[in-house]
Image 1: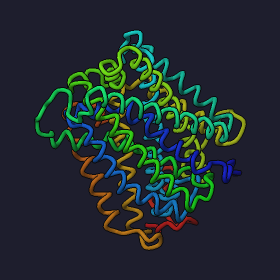
Image 2: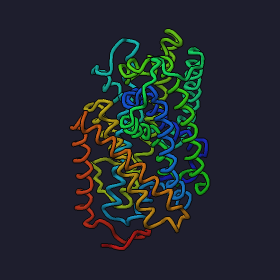
Image 3: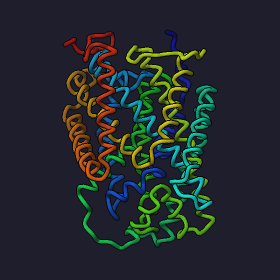
Image 4: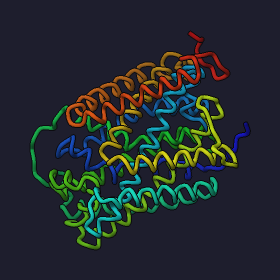
Length: 440
């Protein structure tokens, strides 16, 4: 099977733009209100905690990507850790699904913001219609090739990062650069809710993993993949804190939660008036559109690599053209389905469950099999596993109380993925050409 990846087609700037594009598109506009709902009035601290957890997780990806840059990225890491068996395939598929879930999250956020000038809320039927329309647009841009995606991502990333910075600074200036919450609450941070909120904060940073999936296409990958990950996370930490404090200083906690699907637009009203409100709407449209574009780019390539590694089955369904074009279609169809049938809260929860389970498996596999080969410190990997497990456990416990259905869906879906891959591959682990462990 011939690969259609284009070596050296993505520059360092383009890769950073792609990484920050995915993160900022979902993180600020889709998750700020949901994080505040769990963490309370000091929700900006959740972004700091999420950045710390992500930093420990990123260590594994940086070490592996610097040693083995690949268009498969996460699939490559898993196959080296577990061999070409069901564990590697299922974990890689969970990561892919979490990214597709993220696309539906961003698509619905796009629809919610577009409708705000018309006083239509996030429950309106037009939200999924607009979201699906954005997904179709992302497909059309992606099908035109890497260079179109790279150029669009760079331009959009600069526009939205600059625009969000202006929003954050202006909102803070309007509040007298007060970092106190607008409600003036001095209540203690709810420990369980705050810890659970970190699961969503991690989602706001998880876009950095898309960089590893394009490793074979980035210029000088042994140096630039790791640098791209570090720069992207650092940029997003600054942007998230700036905006979170700006929103918190403009709105009370109750107001943020009430407008959780479009909290930035509501925060712009007291700070800037109607012009700022429309500016923020435009900014959200740019951010979510570019975020979805970059995510579709990365997911389709990961699915293509999984197909080439024979970890998942593939059917042409009568379509012509290369595998990458087929996986683009699969990506947008599944994302469109989720956009229509799930709301933002459930989409975010499902994505968090899938991603954290996959992330734990990544760290554990590297710790057991690869840490000496890549020169990784074992204690960092253990800390990463422990933090992921803590956040996943608390988040799952809280969701079990507030929305047991989404927990049941997540558990059933994860079990189904592992069972399906076990049947398809007929082995949990296996020795392969990629340095996997011995068969058991």
